Structures are given as C-alpha cells and as structure tokens.
Amino acid sequence: MAMDRTEEDDNLPHRLLDGCQRDFPLTPRPFGALAARLGTTEARVLDAFRDMRKEGLVGRIGAVYRTNTVGSSCLAAIGVPLERLDEVAALVCSFPEVNHNYEREHAFNLWFVVTAPDQARRDAVLDAIETESGLRVLRLPMLEDFHLDLGFKLSWS
Amino acid sequence: MTPDPIDLRIVEATQAGLPLVARPYHAIAELLGLAPDDVMARMARMQDLGAIRRIGAVPNHYRLGWRANGMTVWDVDDSRVDELGERIGRLPFVSHCYLRPRRPPAWTYNLFAMVHGRDRAEAMRQAEAIRAELADACRVGEVLFSTMILKKTGLRIASAAAE
Image 1 (cartoon, each protein chain N blue to C red):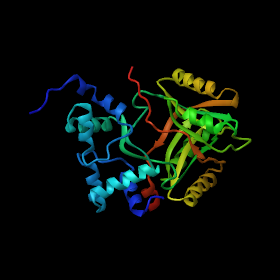
Image 2 (cartoon, rainbow over the protein chains, first blue to last red):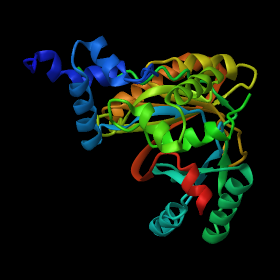
Image 3 (cartoon, chains in turn brown, purple):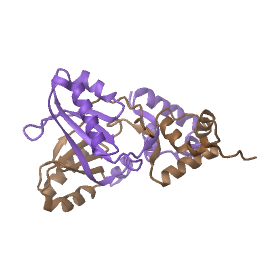
Image 4 (cartoon, rainbow over the protein chains, first blue to last red):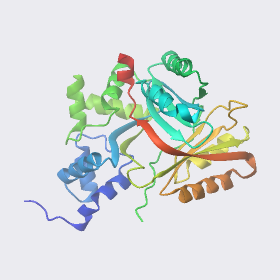
C-alpha cells in the first residue's frame, strides 16, 4: 500500500542534496539505505534523484575521484584578444581532453582544464592549443589540494 | 598502492555517475563482468587510499541558484601557504582550494579558492572573509568571475584515451 505523501517528501530533494554530497552508501541497495535514514521509500529517493538529474540540479550521483589519481590534469588560462574570443574558445572546446572551459573577467579571460590519461598527452594538448591559437597558454597544475571536500554547504534560506 | 587495471575499469564505468537503479553497484558489476562485492570492496579501498574523495550527489551550483562563481586568487607567503590553505579549504562557502605554481611576471598568485554566491555581492563578501583569514601573509588578491560556461563535462578519461 502506498504511503501518503508527506511534507518531508516535498522537501526530499533538498534533504537529499544536503545529506548526500558525501557518505553515499557503499552497500547493495544504497538508495534504500538513504530512504531508511530519511524516513521515506527507496522508490521516492530514486524518483527525486531522477527529477534532480533531469532538471540539471545534480550533475551526477557517484564517486568524486581525486585529481591526478587517474590520468593527469592541468588548469590553463589564455589572455585572448576580445575579437578572437569565440574562435579560440571553440578551438579549446574542440579537444575532448578539455572538460571545463570558462570565460572569466580578467586579462586572462579563458580558463580551462585539460585532463588526459597521462602527462605526456596532457602536455601535447596544451602545446597544440598554444600552436594552433598562436597564444601563450598559462599552465597552472595543482600542487596541493587543501580542500577536505565535505560537500558544499547549501543553505536553502 | 595505486589503483590497478580493474580499479581503473570501475573508474571509467562510474565517472559519469552511478546508474539510478535500486542496485547500482550490481549494475556496474554486471557491465564489467565482476562480482558486486568486488566492485564495492574496490571502491571502498579506493576511498581509503584517497583515490575517491567522496561518493555522493554532485550539485550543480549554477542551476541551484548560486549564480556568482568566483575564482579567488591570492599571493600568499610560501612559508605560510600550507597552514593558511588548510584553513581556507575548511570555510563552508569554499568548494575547492588549491596551491598552484606562480608564473611571473604574468601570474603571481599561488593560492586558489572557489567561492559561490547567489550574486556577486555575496561572493565578494566571501572573498573578503578569505582576505581577512589570510591577513598579512597575503600581499594581493583578485576575484575572477565567470561570465560564460563554454564547456563543462565530467572526467572523460576513457573517451580521451580512445581518441
């Protein structure tokens, strides 16, 4: 028999986001375990996650792997003349190894992350972007990660 | 100890997220021809080793209303940057905090901390709180706001490797 919807269920997406950024259970039925913790059903937890995925509120539910544990990545920046921004941004995005590319307000206005299976391939991509754009690429690999990654505190005020 | 080839297959199969089914680890195990217990044990081991930072929901800050994404960058004394970086990394509004090399003269900042505000004013208050923590160990800093997300995908080791 289906349980009546409760006010808690209406807040379920927020409760899942606040409570599930880490410590997602590594057990056979993790969504069921979360449901038990939150006083709801496995089906409702799965539905809430599916809805949040569909709406783009959550990118994914899964493991966050530490940078450079698998593969090699590097933050890079280019100071692109404004009249060339679209062209250079498109060039950077065209590499499958580029997984983030942001325009930022600064003399260095294009910021992107190159991730490849190994450092040689990573550096080859950075070299190729430099050669093809004719612009200097600032290479800023991570030296130390200070963040404990407890999940970002979302306040719903 | 580093992840072995079977661990890496699990990484490839899960880097875009777990399937939203009642038994997601069983689904991954079936995909890879492994035992479900082996998949869970290997992921637990990668978590113990630090290769997996956490397992959970990865929120999309922008879609949730945190529209002002500020990359704060600081020139911090090398002798104090480790201690201060640990402190900044613990601030509740900081989602990433990294030490990176300076590239003088073009780039003189070594500490990066990402902040997220509903608007720029909130992000600027967060940056000011970081500035106060760094105090006299920091010579100068800046906040770089993003004006456009041109590309954002998860890690794609496998597809990159296949190119």
